[in-house]
Length: 114
Length: 114
Image 1 (cartoon, rainbow over the protein chains, first blue to last red):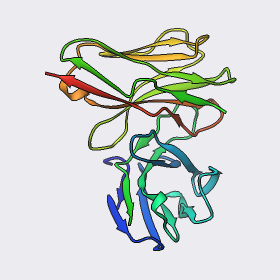
Image 2: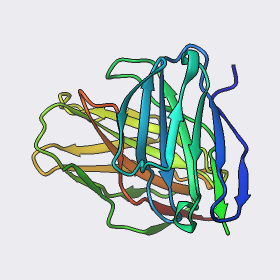
Image 3: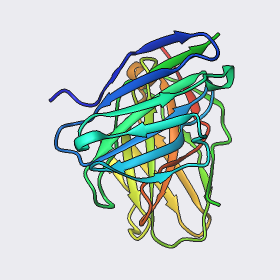
Image 4: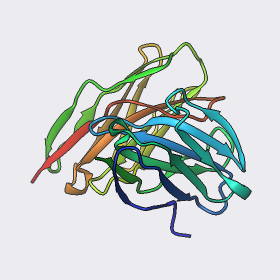
């Protein structure tokens, strides 16, 4: 296993379009996290899953955002009716459950909304 | 609400010298974890070092060590014998013992001068 993977790495879209990103975690990990990082800032938490259950969502995750993790494996993050303010790097991380376990990050998907 | 502050947007150090990056945080919790992550230009976050709040001993990982001052809510990272490969954005992050979302500082850009 080579780590957390994310696809696509880059996405350019026009305002108002829908986009979907995919994250494949490290296979043994049961927790999966999504973060958003804008240029020059630290990441901001969006949501996380334990297995297929979405356990927490940030207030940043508006109604236009939805995340799923069917079967507790890969996850998708969909943004509907994209806005220019959605332009950011979307990071995925995975970990074992347990307070001490490290989150391993993927390379991110950079979204540009024109 | 918990916050993490990195007051140095950019630091530079001569190769082979030592540099210290600062981080302060605000929390009313007693059990938590603190992290330093490195994000090289390729943008994948890598964990550098971790500190459990209940541990009095400062964490060390090879050339990387922390100065954890719980009462002062300070968590600085010292990099000894700086190498060109240390050039990156460094983020300080906080997590409660019972909550898995990471709260991040804005980052410090570390420049290594050859």
